[in-house]
Image 1 (cartoon, one colour):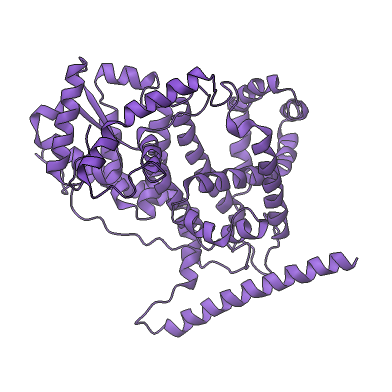
Image 2 (cartoon, rainbow, N blue to C red):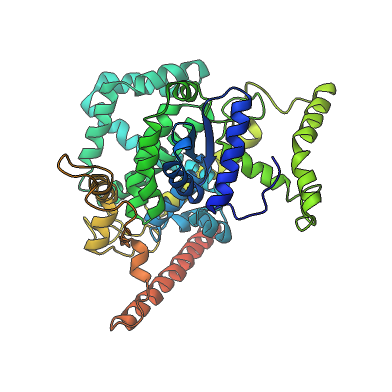
Length: 478
């Protein structure tokens, strides 16, 4: 379709796009039309669907997976802000300071995903020995079986290990292990971080493999964090999205369960992406040589570039086929190659070394700090309010989401509408985190005190770097 030279969020623009898409669907004998968009357009499409009777049984808007992932990356960054994770990434050489800021803003998607994935793996390698000791004490037979599979380097044993790890017996041991650490607030805090990253990876797997049920489940697990850390648009429209997706027409649901809610370009494995992710790649091609740079103000040239894109893509594909140029192995994912595994392994080892240098999960991180949450890099102690907020972020967010659904999306028997309007403003939680320790509150009597704490933080960082430098020089002299 040609480019529509109008703001995308306006209802008139969206209505034009929907009508054209419905026409194309009808031409191919397709009863329903699925449109995948970001959150800013999703809410407008839903309002349009609710207003126009013709669209209610034909139009199915979907939230784009890429934008969901990027917002959850920002939610993780909000949760971990000031905890010492950024310092670990910088000191280990995994990311530069500028890239860390982009990851914390949820912008650098690929680097953010890799950083969190490697951090999760590093933390598991640190926790695993303690867990194995616990398993040996609780279930010797399970420990022996797990140890035997762990040392077996045969890739064919991986499915067997996955089956073993999914057993109820192992899950109970894992739960008992976490419960045994309930008094160690620093362990619980980082365990919650590992859980958040696991949710993100599950959501990514759902897209890469086209697993519809896992897609919905992992998204539902994100909602409490969206609400707790003031991602209010996703907190408001997330329940609506889930409700819509659980009431899909049978033909659409059947296709989605087959994996046809994601797309792929090459025959490689584990490389499917949401349509909004694919469109970002298309948009990227327009910013390169041969793209739309320099012609955006010439309507005719812009339309020619857009309308001929499919034809140029077809020509490129035929050229690759003529010269038998394979885009890559159909059996091996890019991240499974040695060229990728080697730097990943080196960065993972660097992360482990940095975490251990910070005395990760040590019971004596800070004198007199037993039972107190602290920044692993600067050793700053969290207040009681911050500690309770961080350790119970999911529960607090889930409670608010339950209230939201009950008050705004549920109609009591004796009522004709929900108790609270769906569009009523949502209040911000401004959930306290480690970063709250260093905020300057203008116009309050505590301003000087807050400034002093910020200076203390800066001094701690400088002192920490000096201590590391002295330690390295001492090692060199030895």
